[in-house]
Length: 162
Image (tube, rainbow, N blue to C red; front, side):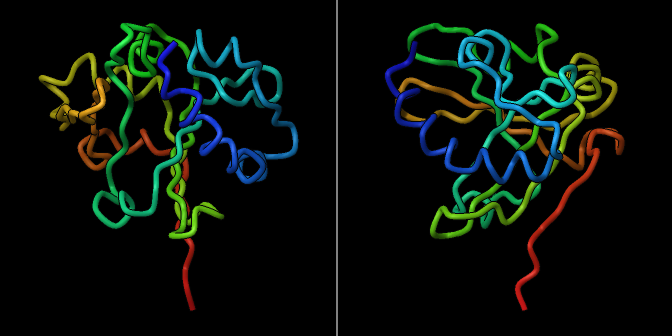
């Protein structure tokens, strides 16, 4: 397992309670072993498997309409992207934190079946993506939400500041 997993996981786990509120009262946390094998952090109604990914506020400012999936890990472990492309996961809850990393200020619920189909057929669907080197042995694939079919997004929400 990547040594950074132990650093990244606790930061994202701070937002699990908020994610469970977003997804509803019948949401439970998946065992870590399921997360590692199947990119599943949360389970709804014992049958919907949800990957959960949180990003820092600086990425919300720079890329509010993109989402990223880890596509390469220095340890050659199976990545989020690979697990999803293998067919694991039903939905992705993708969120951005506020500046203080205390609350989710934007989230998007993504249909992973639509994602997989559009990505597999990206030559005809015109899905826009690019690779990002994280300079720590990991890489991400960044995807433009607007380049996917409109049914990719199940629901989205952004906090409005008054």
